[in-house]
Image (cartoon, rainbow, N blue to C red; front, side):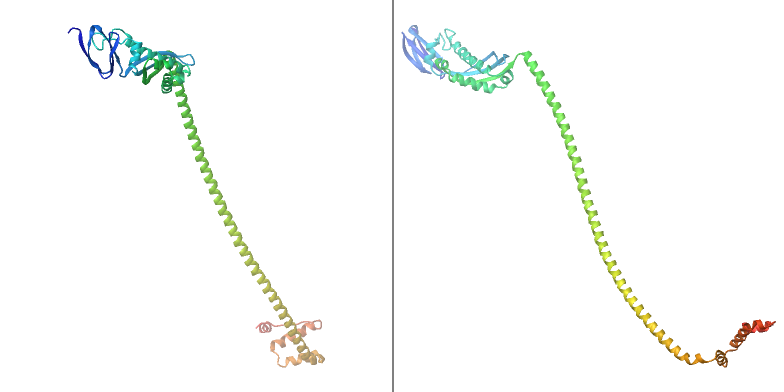
Length: 335
């Protein structure tokens, strides 16, 4: 009515109200009446804005990669931004008269792209594909030190790199190489497992041989102990036999001495008997043998008499012509 209108901004909108070239109202979430024909209103959104991006870069080894991510920022100096870009609204509070509000996001994305290019140029392809977090930290550090960001009146709230992808041909080559590497690792794992099994088997065999050697050593010690015990027993038995032999030798010596003493005694007795017999027969040596024979026949056995007669016959055989002995006489003599 009569060109007077009412404006009420939100909590994430910074309003600048110019009337006849002079600043009349400003602030976050401002609400006021204004005369439209003489007023110019700029509404700068100060809430966080998410801007997706995707662009191609080259790595240190000149390999193209695609970097995809998202930038989150907000405007911290609305008046500065309003002086750089046209945020003038038309009939509605969110209806801008130009496309300048869209340029803010593009300028920030350009700053991010320059920083990402610097990070990608530091790393070769393989490292760059797995360095998303390192790249984010490097980009944020560059943006924090870049005066262009402060000149735009904005601050970076968050930066996320969702993917770093090579070209399809490079990806297939990397996949093939990775697959070959995995196959090599698998073969190496099989080889290592077999080697481990062989090594384990060798250790088992070695332990078995060591056990056998230990058993043999123990058995040898047992045999040696038995031999030493047998030698000790044999030594004891030899000592016993030597002691017995010494005893027998001593006994034989004593027997020898006893026999010598007995022989000496027997000689002494024989000499005594010889002396006695000689002394008793000495008176008879002077007698005539025939006299002695006659003396013996006085009380002799008849057989002795016959034997004496036969001896006399034999002594005088040259004097006897014929001698007849009857069978009865022989039978008698035999009886």
